[in-house]
Amino acid sequence: MKRLLMMGLLSATLGIPSAAEAVNFYDGVRALEGLYFLNYVSYYTADEVTDDKGDTALDGYGFKKVQEMVRFSYYAGRWCFHAFIPFGYKEVKFYGEDTWGLGDSNLGAGRFLPVKAVDIVPMLFVKFPTGRYDRDRKVNYGDHQYDIKPSIFLHKTLGPWTVDMALKYFYRLVNPVTHRAPHNEFYAEGLFGYEFWNFVKPGLSLNWMKSGDDKYFGEETGREAKTRESFSVGSDVYFRFNMVKLSFTYLYDAYAENTVRGHYAQMKTVYKF
Image (cartoon, rainbow, N blue to C red):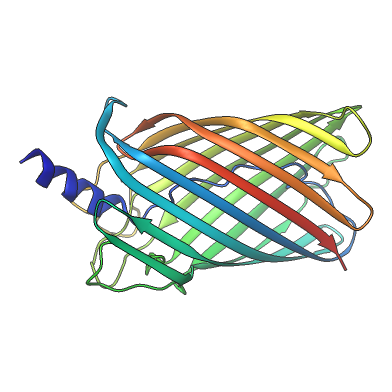
């Protein structure tokens, strides 16, 4: 019986992101005008699934996600525009299934506030259901539903110190196949760095996520789905070179409630045309 209940919980949570990509250095900076190409290569692995007390409910889950995400960003005055296109591979050994291909793409735009002391940019993103999806499979790379994602980013430089923060709210719409909407998600992310030399900067990265079942347009969430919460901690190291900028991120899910608990690693490359 416990195994059946756990399979129901996992089926309801497989569509959620395995790990939220934490804010990186200069994500909210008022960048120079022009077109930027960014590439994110990430890996997430988790063997544990937790219960509503944060204890291990299942060990040996065998979740793995490998992803490459291409991003194009254009900055013009106070405006910025972004497009994210992910590709990757996902598997869950618990189900004996895997999947690969195109993920769900995102488009977004933002406008910097007229504040000189700190860079603040509210943004609005929309996630489109472009990812690979099969209603007969438990493991899918796409979620087959739209998200509306208002966000706000902040950047502040104080001598060798920098602060990067982000608040994000994901309003998740109905999957037309299941006729259910995933839980909404709220993220609070922070990165606090110190530049030791003019080309390298390490920092402490913190990421908190909490989901909720509030819906404002009459959607229904999955009956078996439970609200989730996680807190991740790690570090980010930034390298500045003439042609490219590189960031390396590591996060560990220090606390996880009703979701997977694992390790996340990412390499980010930034190139300006």
